Every structure is written in structure tokens, then in C-alpha cells.
Image (tube, rainbow, N blue to C red; front, side, top):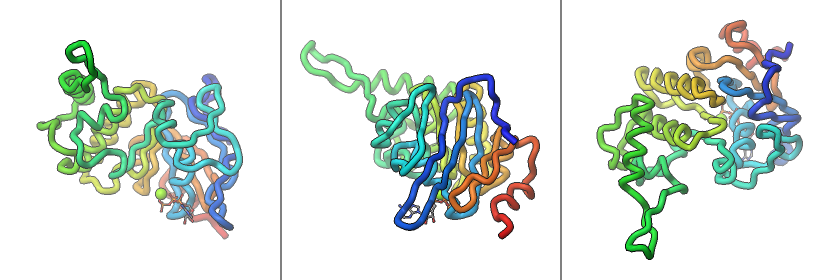
Length: 253
Ligand SMILES: Nc1ncnc2c1ncn2[C@@H]1O[C@H](COP(=O)(O)OP(=O)(O)OP(=O)(O)O)[C@@H](O)[C@H]1O
Ligand SMILES: [Mg+2]
């Protein structure tokens, strides 16, 4: 059964996407449509192809076959920066942010505003960055006492929050999260769930990969199940159960 809403144009459309590593087909003919404000849970056992699939959307890998559309336009991405510039933000537990830099710099990374000094040379506009960072973090109800602390000294939840603030500030068209709560305590997991809801309320679709089915049920509207590279399920979260997902993930051979 096709559970995707049909009224709107998808923000992202994957059509028959393949990725091979040598003799191994990591992603095998996967098609998915993602609509505005939709939260997609992407689940599957270890090695099912989830990370490989999202890496093709975030510009890390090029597909060996198939097409990817962002809105109406077919895209071919040659780098993660290109994906970011198109509004595709990917958030990994640890990798998304620059450890040595503070939250403000991370929110503006690669897009720092410049201010003309003495009418001659341009300088990064730190006061503006700081003010804007405070605004977006307040909007998300995120409390980071010291914005000048390097990211390295922040908790996993705070890092997630900064990455999400960046996505929201730059009006991301799509946010991808790979195991966002894997290393978090329960209150921080809740905060990530809240942030996913905030993105959804802002009509930004989210793809969330998680081994934790509680995460998936707390956030997802629709759940895509992968097994051995193939999509084996595409279900409305409200119509399925953990047991059903697990049997799809494990399969019957
Ligand atoms: N760069 C790579 N080179 C060779 N094989 C790879 C590479 N990346 C992934 N694979 C293989 O592709 C398959 C899919 O891996 P992938 O990382 O996408 O799985 P996953 O669903 O994200 O798993 P996990 O839940 O463990 O993160 C696996 O068999 C993996 O060993
Ligand atoms: Mg993975």
C-alpha cells in the first residue's frame, strides 16, 4: 500500500536509487517521497543500508543508479557542501559540528556575515552572529549558558541543539539525522524529540535514522524499513507496531 500523501509536491524524491561497494549492493532500487513537514523514521538492522542511503542525499556518495529530485529539480550532488547550500542539513551525533569552535561559529559555519571596517576591508561580524545565535536558540527554547565555549565541551544534547539551530536559522529544506539520540540521556532524548517537532511545525521535513524504536514512534509520521539494501516497508507510524517493524527488519528467509 502506498501511504504517501498525494496532494503536494514532495520536497525530496528518490527514484530507484542504487549504491554498490564492489560486489556488495548497499542500496538496492530504493524509491521514497518525502513531503513538507513530514517526519520519516528510517529503520533497519545493522548494515541494512540506511546510512548509505542518506549519504547519497547529503552529497557524501554519488548513487550508481536512479534519480534524486529536490522539489521539481533533479539534483546530482558532488559534495556535502553542495547539499548544504541547497538546504539539505545532515546532523550526525558527533560529526556535524566543528569541535574546537563555539556554538555561534558553528551556526554560521561557511556563511559568516561580513562587516566593512574603516571602509576598506571586511571583517566577520561577531556581534551580529552572537545576537542572531541567541535569537534562534531562544526560539528553540535551548539554554546554552556560555555560547563562547567550544562545542567539544558541550553535552551531546546541546550539540544536537546547535546543529538544529543552524538548520532552522538557514531555513533548511530538509533535515537528516543519523542516530541523533544514540549517546544521549533520557532528558536530552526528549529534547531532541521536541526539536524534531519544532522542525515539523516549521514545515521542514526530517529523516531520522534510529535503532531506538521509541525515538521513531515519538517522532515519525511514516516509517521506512530497510533490509539488506532494499526498502521492505513504508508504513504510517500510527498503523504499525514495534513488533511489525522488527519482523520486517529481520525478515523471514
Ligand atoms: N564505504 C563503504 N565501503 C564498503 N562497504 C560499505 C561502505 N559503507 C557501507 N558499506 C557496506 O554497505 C552496507 C550498508 O551499510 P550502511 O552503513 O549503510 O548500513 P546501516 O543501515 O547504516 O547500518 P548501521 O545500523 O549499522 O549504521 C553494509 O554491508 C556495509 O558494510
Ligand atoms: Mg548507519
